[in-house]
Amino acid sequence: MTADLPRALLRPDRGGNAFEQTVGRLAEAIKLGVFSPGDRLPAERELADLMQVSRMTLREALTALREAGFVETRRGRAGGTYVCTDITSRKVSDSLRMSRRSGSRLDDTLDFRRAVETGAAELAASRPQDDVGRRRLLDALQAVERATDDEHRRTADARLHLAVAQAAGSESLTAAVAEAQVRLGELLVAIPVLRRNIDHSDAQHRAVVAAVLGQDPVAARTAMAEHCDGTAALLRGLLD
Image 1 (tube, rainbow, N blue to C red):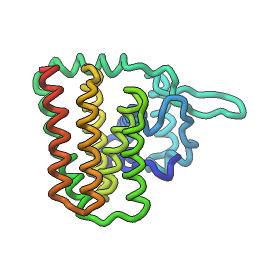
Image 2 (cartoon, rainbow, N blue to C red; image 1 turned 30 degrees about the vertical axis):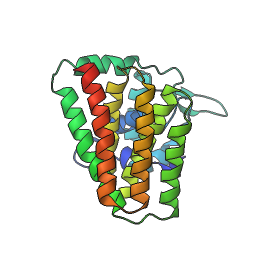
Image 3 (cartoon, one colour; image 1 turned 135 degrees about the horizontal axis):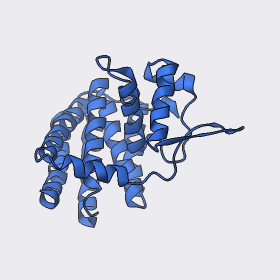
Image 4 (cartoon, one colour; image 1 turned 180 degrees about the horizontal axis):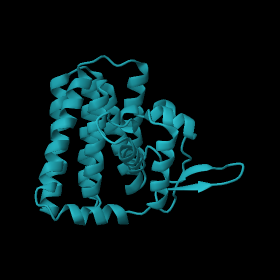
C-alpha cells in the first residue's frame, strides 16, 4: 500500500508540532481515500518511518484518531489499526457549517485551490513523465470515469488531482494540493451532484492529463483553470 502513497501528504511539515501535524496528515489521507474505510494502516514502524515521526508520536496520533472515530484497533491474528467502516459525512458537514460562519471561507478555499492546482498542472506538463508517472495519471483518470457512485467518484477525483501534483515533482506543491482537495471536499458535500457537471468535469480531466502527458504547460494550466473555475461557479452559485 505504501509504495504509491503521496509521501508529502503524510509527512508533517518541519515547522510545526509533530503530534498535531501527524493527526492532521492521517485524517487528510482518510478523507481523501488514500486509506479507505476498512483498510488496515501500515505497521507502526513502517508508518512512522514514512511520516518521519517517532513511534511514540504516531501512537499518540492514532489514539486521537481512534477517539475521533476515524480508526479502530483490532486484536488477534489480523490485528492492527483499521480505518473505521462507519465513517459518515457528519463530521465534514458539521465542519462546513462552522466554516461558513466566516464569509471569506468559500472564496479563500476556491482561490487557494485555483492557485495551487493550476500551478501544479503547468509544472507537471513542463517535466517529462516516466512510464510509472504516465501509468499513474492514466489509471487515476480511468478510475474517475469508472466510479459507480458519488462517494467513490469523489475519492477517485481527489486521487487524480494528487496524481497531477505528484507529476509536478514538488512535495510541497503536492501537500498544498492535498489541503486544497480536503477543503474543497468539505464544500462539495453540501451541494447536489449534477450529471452535467460530472460530464464537464470528465472532459476537463481528460484535457489536463492529455496536456501533462503532451508536455504542453500552457494547455495544462488553461485546462485546470477551466476545471477549477467551473467548480467555483457551481459552489458560489449554490452556497453563496
